[in-house]
Length: 425
Ligand code: GDP
Image (cartoon, rainbow, N blue to C red; front, top):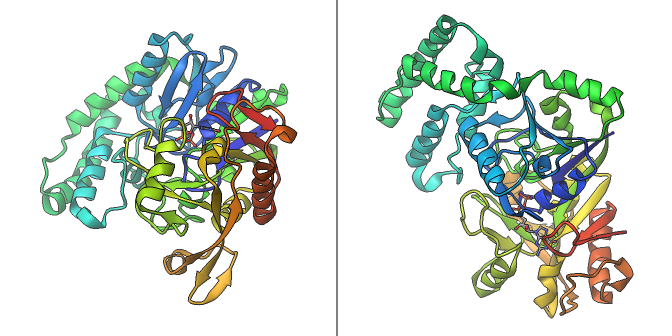
């Protein structure tokens, strides 16, 4: 059976923890999109880890960790991560990399930086991991697939020359930066080949066979619905699809095999980067939530940037869950709200005087004002509680209120960063 773990919102919903938990029961965990631009924070018996590239199953000895074809593969980052977890005592994971994954080149990262510099104040808030230039090249058909690393040098050189011809126009006239040369590109590719050769395989075939054998496969999404290039808050989105449906493409499995879609939804909102964020809060109210949020504050796992904070947004979350095709909602970081006497929730948007609970396209979203309803808080620490009935009444009411507004079943409630901090309903 295939399950997918994905985000309902802007990312940082706590997918890493839920994936880590579900990975215990999975034979295979697959990353199917995105790159090293986002990160999961995982707390387990080995310690606390920020993973950017590796699938969250790497901590389980019996789990195979797969980098699917849909991923933006940053080989040095991946290697650094493998090294660092092994140094911290985690047994060497079983890693497989799709021969159809494409490679993030050092020039993609440079182009990302140059473009941010050019856009200056109008930038998208890129993490400068090369993701947008990478995916642009993939679809412009000038990317390098892992399989190509094993081609003759001559073929690579020819391709590198073509790339330089195109890229150097921008480097010279648009960015005024040093030019690329084909020999450097080929050298970089050779280094990458050495690093990943032992892990490369035909991932879609491996997964096909695993499915026939009845293996449990977990697809691990990055970011969330609202960062999807089609269904998110374009153009303030990421460059690969963040939806469970894309799991079929980005891993290479039949779409009908995805039976469970676990959408992770945080009990309040946070976002990084630019873009409309209707339920956003500011000042001391935001600072306090940011300080208390997540596990040690709401700061980007990759960049360390302070996240923008807001109250739970029922409109965005209902949409985020719908567009994922949610079967189960995992409602996370609920314990953090324990300090509040009262909890504001955004229940609708007011767009030019019209009240709606349907998430609009970006131009309308920018005009949306939150319609807030205030629920009573529970004002105590709920960490350590194992049974739903043992949660304070106001806490259960908050969960049930949100469930009713979003219209998808909350089957898991996370009340702490650890694997065991989970309440099943
Ligand atoms: P991801 O990208 O969706 O995996 O999210 P992040 O890793 O950026 O954010 C989740 C943060 O919240 C991490 O620091 C987790 O350890 C932490 N976390 C996850 N679930 C919970 C929870 O239920 N309670 C608390 N307090 N922290 C949590």
